[in-house]
Image (cartoon, rainbow, N blue to C red; front, side, top):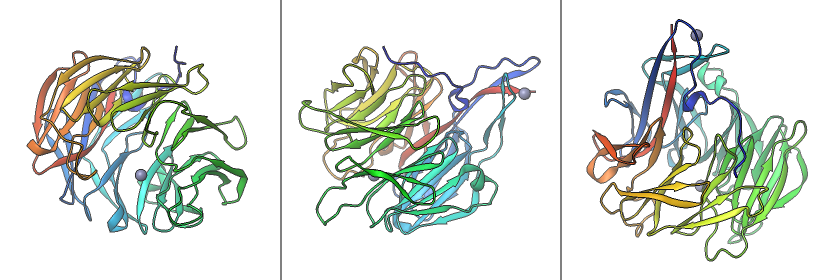
Length: 394
Ligand code: ZN
Ligand code: ZN
């Protein structure tokens, strides 16, 4: 049985216990066009809440609080930030929800080639592939216009990642020679001093957080960085062993239970539960995988879209596909990795799925896995993130 994590997740819908308060629920989608330099904010009822010009097409990440959306534009050398307009304020036994217009902040974060965005408890690490440097900053700095990042050098430029852990940071190291894989992960203090030896994680790519710990994908397994009460995180390598061709290079982390879901080869996913007797459970898919998401509101549920256009419900406790429905036309995984294909985001009781070739967002009920309705979007809707939840209004 998966271990429960107890915490409040404003972003995934708080229980409202406040007296004399109305409960309101609001979800807002941010959708990046595949080709055009534009991000659209679309409320779940279909209303366009904002449209923002960016330098080029963006890869979108949302903060844990849901207050900011980061539009990472690697080849344009910048990151722009949209304040989502969806804000939760902690009132002790409940949270208040305020919804205002989203806004493109004046801040432009300039980097040589920004790529991976990782947040841990309000601290953000943006990795600059062009320099091998990490910019560390708080979300508050971004929203209050007091941006003053701490820069940590990791060595040579590479497609890397970093994860903040309070007074420490974990980052990837560049390959020692051209053509060699990235060798692994290093823990350092915030002034950039390495702590201990490099922990091998060949080809390190992909990271996710669950229960305060981070998992990183390697070509031969997964490394867990476990947060400690004090001091640096402790890193442990879990070899995937004999699961056939493939490795983990993309991960999502469970919110109410501690587990990770990763890719494994083109046609499988793997449920990873550090510390379990069988830490890896591979789940084969009928065709190749397009995208997948975990459901913060229904912790045992993951949703996987495959190239035949089917959406699958994966029961992560049972480790089995529980239901499959036809959702989109086929989207072949042949061709370029960045060809327009659907992407998934969780919005409360809905899975929001972009369907780029027909210009739609499909809203699928997590109760039934049936499509409830669609939202028409101009252009080629591609990357998508959702923020929102329910809160008090009084
Ligand atoms: Zn209140
Ligand atoms: Zn990457």
